Length: 284
Length: 158
Length: 169
Image 1 (tube, chains in turn purple, orange, brown):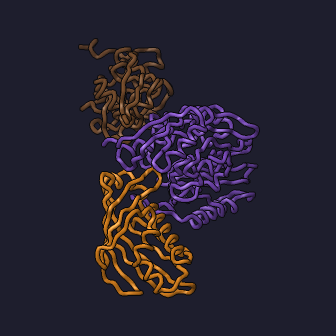
Image 2 (image 1 turned 90 degrees about the vertical axis):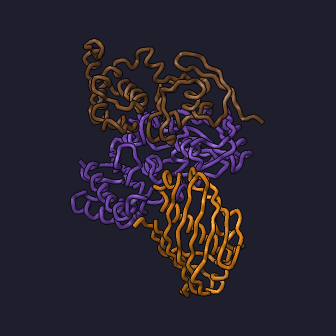
Image 3 (image 1 turned 45 degrees about the horizontal axis):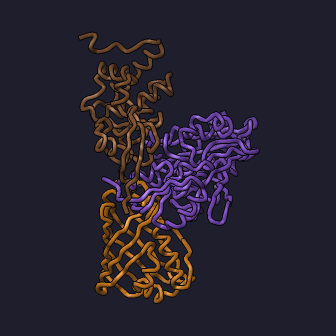
């Protein structure tokens, strides 16, 4: 199928993009990598009248270390994250997660900011940004505001981003030397959306994990943190008994929603499978 | 797809029943409702802009009510077409019961989605349906001057 | 108001100027306007990989990229990459292994494989399978395609070329 007709503009500056977005209102649509948008346009699942291509805006690009944070611009592609030495050093979880996103040809165009702004509950970056306690940097008509990933993802495909705002970048605290992480997703085919996935980090001291953050994705309307399971693990000697307890707790505290092929029960089960594997991996 | 749930609305049964049968209240409560008209006591037509994530599709549909027992329950059959985007059809049963703090609305829905929307959006249809139902009841309760208290909802593909 | 936009890009080494509707995606532009029939259109929703082309040195899904977005870019298709010899080893190896039947996926498969050889010259069989998981082949069952790519990786590691099929004829 072919897309319906639309106009196309490519502003050079963020301010210009913001005013175009304000003028366009509901009929305007931002495009960055377009890897989700183009499929919906081709299938006529959405028919905006104007696309605002933001890929020329310099402020939205690049990966850099700013103070004690790693700044990732909204336009950074999945491939750039996969190949970045700064990411490998300061946010290794992201490097591990990147190859799971679709396929190389899609990773070459799809962006960090696009994935976060859509807030797809099965996507890798929303889950990772929660786990890594990222801060979203957002620009709108009123200027800049910052919001934690924890407050950003509200509901299915719903973030705190207002229609007249643009996600500019995120900042992620640099990984410490004690940081251990685990990223895995269970999918029927490499590159497919996960049936269930886990993005986890913790600080490791001997056989004790602290500062645990376990975010499950593709199990609910948003990525979800297993906060009770985290509390169980934090600061305790990690042994098989504790792992069993934490697995039960995670299965209990997260209410999974079925998708077209997988029941809620199956997802609930996989939450435990992933957590057990993750904990054993991180403590090893 | 099945969607079952319960909502407690802090308003008495007759008011909730009246609201559910008032197309002006429905127009303000149905997320994305652009047009609504009553063709007969049992038939309602509506145009709805379905907007979720990257998808924005306009559906035209009709709702047929049956087994109507005022202040108690009714059944409805619905079907909607979104042109190239796809179609949705199904049936739903709604029951009202008096409960502490207001009226307990319970619903069971069976629906199927087809076309491009089913093909591409199928992955998140259950989660989407749950969100739409939640949004509806929140707005509906607000229209009645009350609020909702979510009890439980079970969006299942069982 | 005409919605048409002026664009210019380099396609297979040649400068191309055109005026197109923004909704035209890159593969339609290449196939319909430039008559380059190498990139194929399968699903048009980014699932099948038949439309794979290179933009600014990277493989992309040609159906998930608008021709206007390619304004100012360098675009390469299987036609150009065949001519300049980038794909020669892979093409010979695909022939040796019968890594195609109907050929619908082949242009996309070759471009994806070429980027793998460039980016991961030490890829294992498992990594090859993962890499081409974004390209559907409905004929071969993939084994012969993976074999063909592995042979090229091995040959490159040894500094060798794939022996042309015609040399054996």
